[in-house]
Length: 211
Ligand code: IMP
Image (tube, rainbow, N blue to C red):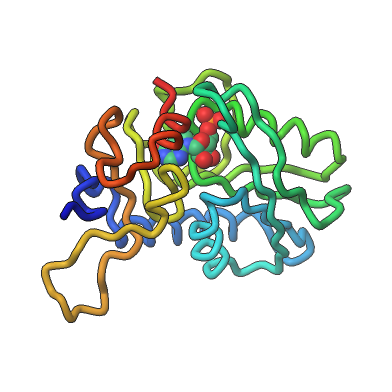
């Protein structure tokens, strides 16, 4: 019986590497912002929820958080149709905003978000993304804080999904009683076309893979 782990090709970024880099990104932010700025971190759901949670635990300055859910690939195989599924609860006029993204791929989603935010009159907008795939970029979009540049491979885990699954996938540890399982690794799937192998949800299968 195949398991979720059969779908993992490799661990791209380990839990320790993630946490070390996220702490470094927070340090960069701590050097820029102080309490008077009272930045608002806007988590782009759903993929960035783990990144936001770990990032904010390292921030020294007073800040607020809000959430926005974006659908990038509703029905097609291109990233052209971006829409807001859940809007901000807060008024961001005059606020210092830090957008927290999971991954910038083509850049179309982030471009849409930035345009939308700019129209609301914030004092400043910066962008933090855990991952970036520069080789896939279709639009030139500025990102202020980048966790890792990754190759053109489909990644999942640590909040990133494939067809709404695999967000919390972990690779089995060699020690069955170990409490320090690698619960937060970024992984890549084994084959874009034949994947995931252990689900019959074929309608979901191709919507997120656009090549
Ligand atoms: P973009 O508009 O092409 O930059 O896509 C951004 C969104 O696509 C991200 O916020 C993710 O939700 C999703 N995405 C792009 N590449 C991947 C990937 O490799 N794994 C999981 N989600 C991805």
